[in-house]
Image (cartoon, rainbow, N blue to C red; front, side, top):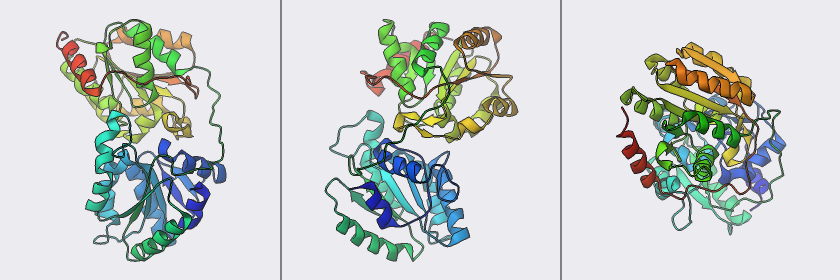
Length: 374
């Protein structure tokens, strides 16, 4: 189905969401049509944030908003759906558009398998009427379903369209870029060189994929790394848990700007605990690159000041490899919680692979290595 047909049939003038590769056609359509426009389209920090934004839009206008997201974000909407939108509370109607990663019978990455199995179950449990759109869904079928959904929305209930792989087509081409020159894979190479045999916890997406391939290219063991292939926004909290229990070992966290934004409260917890052995590196390209390159708001905020306000004893931003190497070496010897923001370009190798070990193997190897450390 053409993405424009979906948008026209839904007929809403406000969209907010967290980008998803399964919804790339919709994301590109919205960026091409609106860009980032507070009246029509906002890319939010996380899916709960989107849901609350949508509620505010409805309160101010009386209209029905649209929230788009990957199905991994369903967990983030459960609270606002149950305690804000629900018709037993404020009865705020919202249309959800959800990319169905890990749909049963469709091959996907391990972090999507269980989420894919429970995607529609969670919607059913939240009493959100839902309809799956596939490659064979016709405009007539969608119009009929939308007519049915309008009756449901009129009662203050929510509805959802679940988007199967390849269901949306004919998206405009949108180029995502910035003026930064440092390439993320090279940045991670420098981090690997500086960290030696210290453990690394890396964030969701291409950063973990690149770290895995760097270890292969260096003929190094993967035991040093915990690849947070799912659970976006939580790698720094995982790193904190490890650092607090391995106080004599330097722990490195390779994070991304979209992940930091998604659960930024974790920075306050990090800053409050001040683990002296944790180095938090945020590779900031101002984009949700792994799912297509759509922008985050991280280019418009000062992560260094935020870290300092959260209690990090040291925080710095770099935009050159000379400065990066200097700060990596200094952080190793500082014995204080440190944040290094690295300004990064958008882009990755076309032939970038995925980890060839399973998530369970990664966990077991990492835990066995941690047993040798104190």
